[in-house]
Amino acid sequence: MSDHKASQVLHVKGRVLVGPDDVRDELWVVDGRISYGRPAGADGAVTVTGWVLPGLVDAHCHVGLDHHGAVDAATSEKQALADREAGALLLRDAGSPADTRWIDDREDLPKIIRAGRHIARPRRYTRNYAHEIEPDELVAYVAQEARRGDGWVKLVGDWIDREVGDLTACWPREAVEAAIAEAHRLGARVTAHCFAEDSLRDLVEAGIDCVEHATGLTEDTIPLFAERGVAIVPTLVNIATFPSLAAGGDAKFPRWSAHMRRLHERRYDTVRSAYDAGVPVFVGTDAGGVLAHGLVADEVAELVKAGIPALDALSATTWGARQWLGRPVLEEGAPADLVVYDEDPRADVRVLAAPRRVVLNGRVIG
Image 1 (cartoon, rainbow, N blue to C red):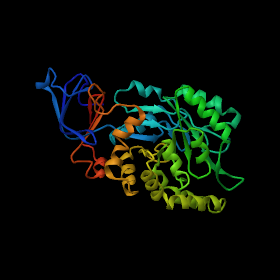
Image 2: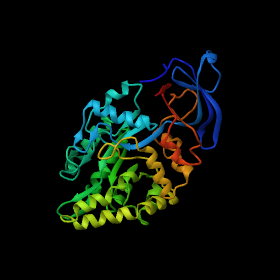
Image 3: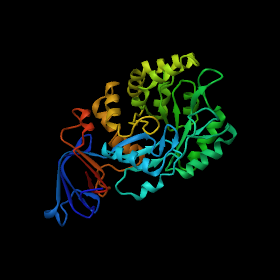
Image 4: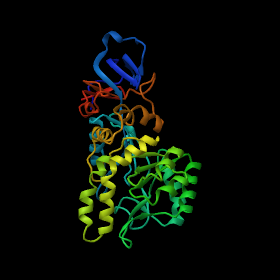
């Protein structure tokens, strides 16, 4: 599980990236927490050297889920371990039907911020994933998941409507307004799966906090997102699957297939335009449905390919992402969740794909 007990003193030396412009020469780990003062017992400390980042964030994944639905604890553990080995030590679980609370008792597994279970319309999402309900039930189910989650609720904002043959919005405006208001009353933020264009304005004007994928952003809605401070998690490693999905729907749903191809073709322009307008952008992989866990470095590289500057793409999985989620970085007294690399990840984000050491709760992993 780990090489060293959290009670041992750990000396981390090299270049500690406390923030984008705050670089220090060393930190210490005592009883699993960060200190910048030389502690008692320092002479016997275990030393780790390199370029140091806060534990990476995957702000959209699904622990406890595969393409069939909920998975068992052993599979959930493998998913969490894959993320850990990739350096993703803080996960926002964007919807899962499985109970993964037991992971919170495991100091060797990433920390999870849960959004409860997806909330969708009947027959308008992947089978076995969501609560499938009608609009008049939305407020009650949002309240239920707000209480079950860790400060987030996840709606399915759009999906293919088989009668229309294309993506359409799932919820009437008045239903999402009431539901988001209820979530906020209970202290939870709300996010929504959205591929297409149609649902975005209603969701943002209703007060939503975040949109997942957001491939349907246009020059009309991007300014609205920026004005309201609504974040997006583009999941570009998942959007890469759109052409194969579209090919599978050509015969039965040609309109939907053509739409999915258009969304895919403009994906990088969409993300860059949102970033340029000041929309907050964060890293998420959508692992756990179809995609494997452990793809956080690939997603950061995709953001850079889309035109986001490397330092901002790095912040979208480190300093900025943790601040957005209300979790600490590398400050005094914070849990020692950090990743060590051989080279400066600010110079080339591809460095993230090869962590030298992962330290979780003060334990050196591997």
